Structure formats: C-alpha cells, structure tokens
Amino acid sequence: MIDSADPTGYRCEVLAEGTVCGTDREVRYVLGVFRTISPVLALRWLRGQARRIADGLDPDPGVSPWFYANACEANPIEDAPTRLRDWAADPDEERTAREHIKGGHPLSVTALDADCTYTLSVRPIRLPLQQYAEAPHEPLMHRIGGLAHPLYVLADDPWR
Image 1 (cartoon, rainbow, N blue to C red):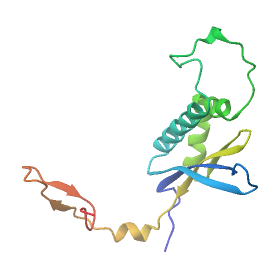
Image 2 (image 1 turned 135 degrees about the vertical axis):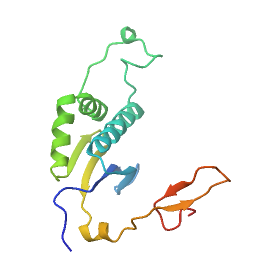
Image 3 (image 1 turned 60 degrees about the vertical axis):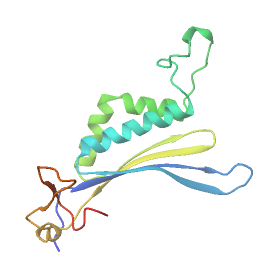
Image 4 (image 1 turned 180 degrees about the vertical axis):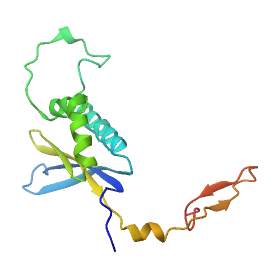
C-alpha cells in the first residue's frame, strides 16, 4: 500500500483534563470530535469550539447583552477563556495554522485554567491510495418516501 503525500482528511478533538473535586484523580473528558476533508472547515470548527468553551467558562463582557462594561472594574489576567478567545479571533494565527495542517502536521492549542487544561487539536488523516481504488464508482440509487427525484447515497446501507 502506498500512502498519499497530502492529507485526505482531518480529525479535530477538544479535550478537558483536570482533577476530580475532592480527589487526587486526573480525568480526561472529550468535549467534542469532528472529522472533515477541509483544513478550512477543521479550523472553523476548532475556533467555534474555542469560543464556546470560553463563553461557557466566562462570558465575554464585550458582547454579553446583560453585562454593563462600566458596572465593575476588573483586573484582566491571562486565563483559559482569554487565551481561547484571543486564539480564535487572530486572523494571522488562523492563516499560519491552516498552512501548518495543510502541510500534514498536527496542530495543538492548550489553554490552562485554575483547575483544568483545555486542549484543541487537529490531526491530519492519510488514507491509503488503494482504498480509493476499491470504492464503488457508481452511487447507489434509492427512492425515499416516494419522492420524484432519486437520492444518491454513497454507502453500503444508508438506512443504518
């Protein structure tokens, strides 16, 4: 089997790792997994997850409708929500990351919080070229619910 030089897909993963309250046990939680063939979609999903985690930990006062920015004074510190928001909003970082994963290299972004570590990662997936040759060339045709137009599905059993 010959491996292709370029990635044929990308596997994205978001993990949270920290100690269980009241114990010394370290636990790893998978917060999300996504697969795609596009490096652009992989980074878009990862950036969306970074914003989701940041807003879940600490809502952004600049965009929260219920928060009045002048209502309190805060000392900004570097924490996980700030790091994740900064990474997700930086277009130069996105461009660099896209070129990095398009080159076939894995990417990992880690944000440390007081009691947890958040890791967002993209791994390129390479499928053997022989696997493409074994794929069926003609799509299977199925009619669903008496529709006038056939729905083409590339699967052995689309009803699973």
